[in-house]
Each structure stands twice: as C-alpha cells, then as structure tokens.
Length: 399
Image (tube, rainbow, N blue to C red; front, side):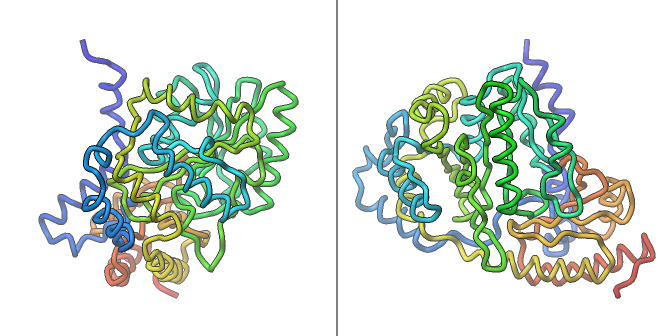
C-alpha cells in the first residue's frame, strides 16, 4: 500500500511549476524565445568565474578520495569556519564553526531549522505573501503553518494581525527578507519591532520563540543597499541560506544553517542538525561543492541584470496603471492584477504568451508574480505583448 498523503499531494502540484511546464510546451510550438516566461525563479546569469576556477582546481589537485568522499556528519569543518568568518566580517556577528551547519540548499537548511526548534503539534507563524513550499516544509515536520495576512501597501509586517496568531504553542516565526514573491526587504524598524515582540511574547509564554530567517536572496539588493541582517536584532535566530542565487548554482544544492551564538542552547543546534539529517536524508552535501563555496564566500555572480530588469518592468507597470510596490531586491515583482481574480487574469495572459503566476498560492489573492530572471532583451520584447493583453482584455492603455 502506498502512502495516501503523498498521493493526495499530486492533486495540488506547484502552480509555479505547472505554469513553467506550460511555457516549455508552448515554446516547443512557437519557439521559446517567443514565450515571455515570468514563471520560475531560476537564475539567468552564469556563476562567477571564481567558482568555476575553484571547482577545476579542486578536481585537478585534490586527492579524489577526499574530494568525493563523505564529509563529517556535521559537514566540512573548514567550510563552516569560513562561513562563520565571512558572516562576522559582513554583519558584525561572532559565529564560530560550531554555529554553522552546511546543508543541501535553503530547503535543507529549513528542514533542519524547523526540527531544531519545533515538535509535532506546535505551530510556526509566517507572513503573506510567502513561498508556497513553506507549507509542505512545515507540515512535513508535523507542525502547523499559520499565515499572517499581507500588508499590501508596503509588504512590511501587520503586527496587529500577527499578534493574533502567536500563542503558547508557537515554536517559531519564519521570515523571508528580501521576500519571494514581493521583493520587499524588511526595514530595520520592522525587524526591531519584531524582535521586541518576540522577546516580550517569549517571556509571556515562558519559552523561547525562535526566529527562522530564510535568506536566499540576501545578496540581490537594489540601490546599493545592504539588506538588514535579522540575527543582529534577535538572539534566538536561526539563519537559513542558499548559494543558489548569489552564485547562480541552484543545481549544486548548497547552503547552511547559522545559529546565533546567543540563542537558547546554541551549542546544541549544530550537533542536533547532525541527528536530524538521519531522519530527513538531507545529509552530507557534496564535498567538492562545500570546498568550492569555501573559496567563494566574498564573490557573487554579476547580479546587476536583475536590477536593470526590475527597473524596466516597474516603469512599464506604472505606465500601464498597475498598483505595485517597488522591490528592494530578489528577481521578483508582485503587482496587483487588473481584476480581483488573479487566476483568471493570469489565465487570460497565456493567450498572449505571457506566463505570470497568480498570487493565491503565495497567500495574497488578487496579485501576481513576475520572475524577471530572464534576458533583458526579452524583457523589453515582452512589453508589446503585455500592452496588447491589458488593452484587449481590460481596455487599459499606456500613460
């Protein structure tokens, strides 16, 4: 007998993936260059040459048994030490290797972080709009995901609504800044208010409520800004990171959990991650890739194209009369649809070979996501299709 739970999940496949598959199929018919695919958040720029050089050097000069062998259960000590030192330099923290656990991407990091601080029957609170895969991540660990309604004016936190969802069974709060799908980064004021709330609420309920900070888009920040580092504001923070976006290596599956040295039982977090791996199967990321990222912690891909694309799309949307919050980072933008039913809006867009993702699965009906990690030339060409779509379907013309 197969597991009915996972069989049932087949009826609720990722909307993002479904639209991406439509784009691929449509591209086979008319040429993918003629499909304006804003569905999937897959980096569109190459990894930095330093990463390629690091891999080549390791392959050429490192003992193959060591290079392709298992790392220790708690992952590669030199990589953990290098990550700790990098975070300390950049954000004024005081991590050591003992606070870092290398993982198979941010998904692996979240799988460990959730199980470090929560037990079945507890809840974790997040904020809409949110990455839809949080739901299976949390529920797969036996916890319940509670979603705070969005503050659509700026996509900062609605603290009044948030406070209604936190109770004695809350294990953690999960944030994503800069955010997928809105592109908004939480301000220092928001993070300080969140820290103050969690400190007071932890005291109220007599146990530490952790902050799990999901930061795969940390390095994609616009306008020369540095995205505030949440662990600087709240001691009980587990930071989850992925190199997928910063180094454009999503297929390599590499990231980490960083436990704030001042969090509750900080000395236990990384050893516990080693035990959690035994149950999740997210264990021993590639030795080669751990060694390669160790050499590339202070470099990124050329991420400037994402800001170029964002500005082009933002200006076009504003000229067409869309309501949209300008992103602080990521490679997403999250406008309000031109009708209340964003699913219907995005379905109509397909007729114009525009692949847009409705915001319903992000917990924000009436909005839609555009992932602009595509060639700038294609972004520009897509505007004719977008203008035709809104003119014919909604009678909207460019200002």
